[in-house]
Length: 445
Image 1 (tube, rainbow, N blue to C red):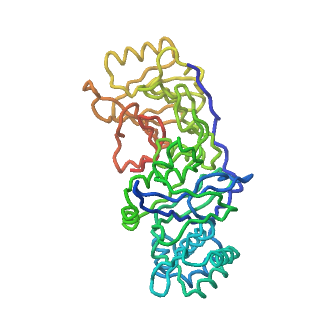
Image 2 (spheres, rainbow, N blue to C red; image 1 turned 90 degrees about the vertical axis):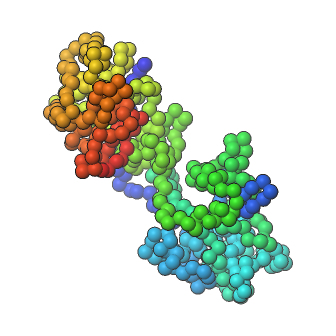
Image 3 (cartoon, rainbow, N blue to C red; image 1 turned 135 degrees about the horizontal axis):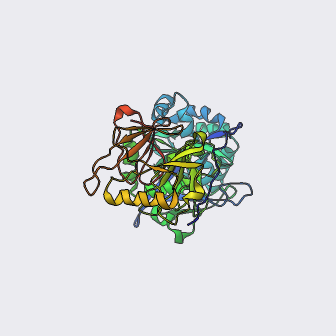
């Protein structure tokens, strides 16, 4: 097993952050005999477009003129929209942009007549509808004039706020996007614009994400479809969205691994560590810990990933090149090559038994003859080379003996071995924990 060294230290932050554009997207739902279906639009193939050829929901960038559409909105004002989106003001801009983009891209318009009925665009002469749509595409003022002439108002009360996504750092273009859902209005049919959008399809969410379907899906689209797949009807989905009291921001992070570079989502084990090691989105942090992989987590911590089912190993210290090794791997490992300096102390998170003590002593003899084996008691403090380790006791191991956890005081990082739960109390303010899966993650007591 060969160690795989990584970049020694995180690179400094980029001095020129990528601009973030605000955007809105409208997810259209309908019920069919097969179940709830969602509208997907296939984007035209374009060079230098990260979404080229992808199947997406209708949507686009919030225009500076979308605020003028407030005059034509009904059922929701800017104060209510901003409160719903958690913004001080301007929330209605996102609703207006979602409706406008849906009309431009798919020919579907959420507008109500004087009797509060959704307009039935299919009843209009084809030439008139196309002329109205072409006029609306020329700018917001044209859409305003069209609605005013017809006596229509944009039906914001038909939309429900659903999710909030931010494109990962490191992507060529970044968007802060609010997603809304709405039931497909009656007496309207999807008509792609033929320029930005070249095809449309109604699919059950589970069908859309099936690899056999072969759709190109962005991470946010795939994750949204996975969420939508839980609902059996449009009414069920709309009721869920209306009942949401808090909608968190989802910002994936780019990382590398066995399957290549991909977006890592907030619920994945590696998410917090990636943000710590690569806040600027270079993509060189890892989402998987292959056995033997060496990662510098900080100036004081180097991790060597262990085999499945065994603890990961950590070199801790660094001052004057003197290090402690927590949970050294067995014979045949390449930890000696991965050591960042001289290893002076050997520690174990395992319970001290005759067997574990003999195993650690054997490793000392075979691999680390210059190191001292330490079996500190819970409550002890070890002053190592530039590192202070507090010894904690998480609870009895399977054989009834007491295991150990080590808290690096300088960085508030806890090494837990294979224990599932940290042995710290809320008042200890531990911010970074290395759990049994090996990834560092944020945990504030």
